[in-house]
Length: 342
Image 1 (cartoon, rainbow, N blue to C red):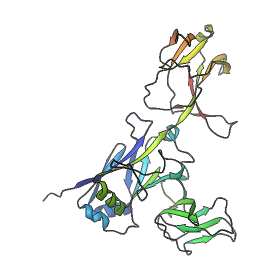
Image 2 (image 1 turned 120 degrees about the vertical axis):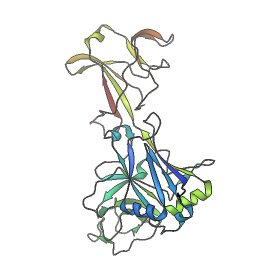
Image 3 (image 1 turned 90 degrees about the horizontal axis):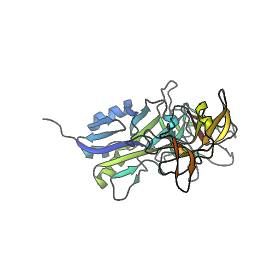
Image 4 (image 1 turned 135 degrees about the horizontal axis):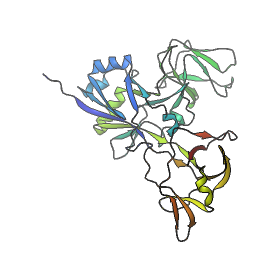
């Protein structure tokens, strides 16, 4: 007899950079522990571009296993440029990853949707340091008592956490299962690390942990549910470099948008490449990078702001691309620049 499955969850990785707002180059891979849980509970994961569906043969089984053992999935991205078009504060691909779980999912009133991060978009709270054992507590104070816990607030045994040196902020983790380690002083969280005991590990972009008991609670409350993580697209200052000599004959150039607003500062002459007198336009504010933009930018000569008229030189200027970003090394913080040469 053919087994029937119930569709109880759709998990979406959303991204404002893409046309359909789905983070299309991502995919999820099951860990060995996840495969075991899926098999034991009769769960099927059906992936698609930007997410996956979760189907189960008997929803009641979700509430039957150890609450401390989640379905652990690795989030990967096959587009190396994701770091350029994604706004991810504090994230470094080499030693940090993005972490999500459904324990503190935020319900969207009147909807089946749950958000798996604190703010509107994935941000610094979801970025965690990866460690194979050694951790350093930022602004360590030897007079303060630090507690190390798992996701549920269960204190980690002192045998698994040892201080490297007396009054040192460096600690060593051992004999622990792979997972998140939280550090508290009193009730305040002062740090978190993702611990992987493997010395050789192909680090994913992120870790997704679905606790089946919590998923069952959400399913009982709302029926089929949706878990969302939403990434924001990076915004940059756009700079147009008019390097062709053909532009030298114009003396009052402007760049306007579809609404005929001058959102770029007046051009400045600047030595660019081998051109000693290139015109350079810089946007007044940061502009989002986007796979497809509905905005139009035009190069106009003798533009009259009151009449909103002028001679169109270039009807549709090339948009900024995530392929190359530029940083002002004289400034310690953003903005990031996008350079466009014409």
